[in-house]
Image 1 (tube, protein in one colour):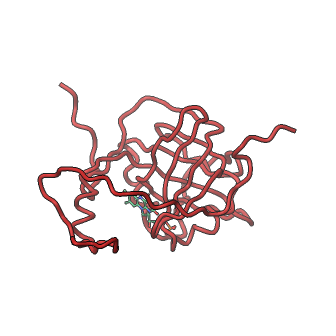
Image 2 (cartoon, helix red, strand yellow; image 1 turned 60 degrees about the horizontal axis):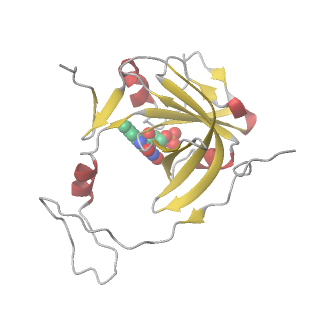
Length: 198
Ligand SMILES: Cc1cc2nc3c(=O)[nH]c(=O)nc-3n(C[C@H](O)[C@H](O)[C@H](O)COP(=O)(O)O)c2cc1C
């Protein structure tokens, strides 16, 4: 039987530290000299800087033993590779859903439309009724498929790497679909949508 190179979930691998890349920026935040030590940034200011990067918004779902369903709002989603089709996202190490995402065979990534902001808020809160009232279909590995997303990627749980206080997941896309519509956008800590093009 043919087995693809990402067929077996891997143990968490630490990333190798690489040299820093220097960039000219109008405002430089630094706790230099660092002497190779970890710089101590102001967390609020670092969040504000990271929030300059506008993203789409996803909900990522999976199923665990005993029909347990988990899902969270995530904007760390990114495309990685076309051939093979790989995507990435990251999950806080302390997230209650971590054990299920670690062990599941598949998860489903839903790219949300601007009409799905209420869902994005619901799935960003720790609550037991996240899936209540949703017309869920079972996907690969029983991952709950939420209807009306702009795009859905059903992924094999291929690789996981330690990444600071998060775990980086690399998913091998096994099935996807998409439709037209306007995306939900997250920027500077707020949900928004795209400004109309002129
Ligand atoms: C726009 C937005 C993006 C988020 N992105 C992520 C993310 O990429 N990874 C993550 O671990 N948490 C992210 N969160 C926070 C989780 O959605 C939140 O902690 C959620 O409660 C986790 O679900 P759980 O408590 O059921 O594990 C995000 C929250 C929002 C509002």
